[in-house]
Image 1 (tube, each protein chain N blue to C red):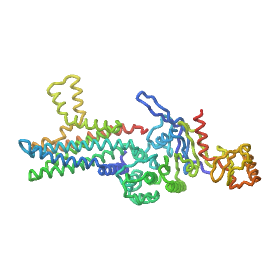
Image 2 (image 1 turned 30 degrees about the vertical axis):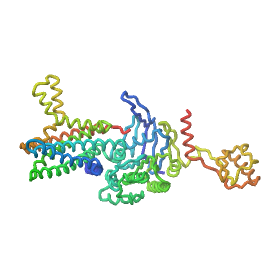
Image 3 (image 1 turned 45 degrees about the vertical axis):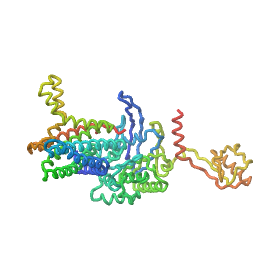
Image 4 (image 1 turned 135 degrees about the vertical axis):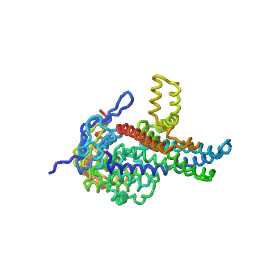
Length: 313
Length: 263
């Protein structure tokens, strides 16, 4: 087995904002240490104001750590050569209004170091990859939010970076756009690119990422392997009936709870024994059962649990 | 370190800035205003006793100089402010772009747009004066060249102030203030020569005189209007001075911008 090759390292990283001229400061990120390895997809999660964007700015070399270190491929991001291997999609991207999509992407490709001989072809193929080739001649100000987001993705991937940093990549996209982005990111991941994603859409993080971290109030609370999510969130048992609950089922005594009522009735149980007792009783009563299954805990539950613990303390 | 890739990146930023500025409404508004002012200069000329063409040239050159500097200050300060406020700069600096490359690209983009505007206004004005004189006064083009040198300095000042100050109004006020101060330096010289200031005050005034841009010597509008010969060496020295002064301002801007935290 080969040793993991770190692409991004945060070593006891802290960042303080200077609040005023008197030198008062606020600590936005406190002593964060984490490593993202080559070829990995890493979800960087946290509530609003948790310090995610502040951390990303230091990863990009836009701010300097107050203490600790940020390294990309073993070097600080203030080294321009290191940034040649990096692609970044910002949260709420804005671009130059009067430039056309093609002109804008050509500029970013030049800045990212795409050779002149490949420029035209690379711009064209990247626009096709994000499905905005039909808008190549349109000015940026004429684009919708979703199309702007696609251009933002295009500029991030145009130079085939080894590390892709995405801050809320699914923002402003309709369901089709979201699916296309997920497919594209999956393809990029398969090509061996390391992906670092900050997103509030935890379902997508669960789908795309190998590992994830959860930040709360400037502190790193948890780093987990998403294949082992069950270790952190309990399994639940779900019994779905195609009718109302028979009164004789006595759901309260079986420690279950009704989650949803519509055309079907869903009963959730924390314990397998309780669920199975309810199932057998429902069968005895002749209730029509549409489904009985064990439900794995998801990232959203874990996120709420981790962030709520911090807020309660 | 400047290498081939640096030049390529500076070129990419300056070209985008140029395109963005050339397509903005501000440029065309200034051009329309220039047409109106040039037209109005004929009116002033006709109601003034003396040489009508002299009045037209005096007024026209002053308007050209003022409008191009105003455009440079307004577009430069808002462009850089927007870049920071809308965080487009984050995207650029996350690429392998050094901060000095970004500032130099912005400077070249804004300066070249201002020069194109000046050139268009100059063509209009030269045609207008040719209509009255029945011949083209090619010396006017030297005047435009000297105005362009002033623009170079003011444009660098806009870049410098943008790297320190955060609001476009202040950037604009400081830059335009520098233009007015540079044009009025002969007043300081007068204060010193006539002995109105002495001792410590004189040192302060002399420092200001040498520290502020010598725009009053770069500008040759009066000489052109009153047909006083301007030696070519003066143009060469003005060019060297403008390049040197702008370089100093840009180096200062880069030193400040390098330390800036984009939080």
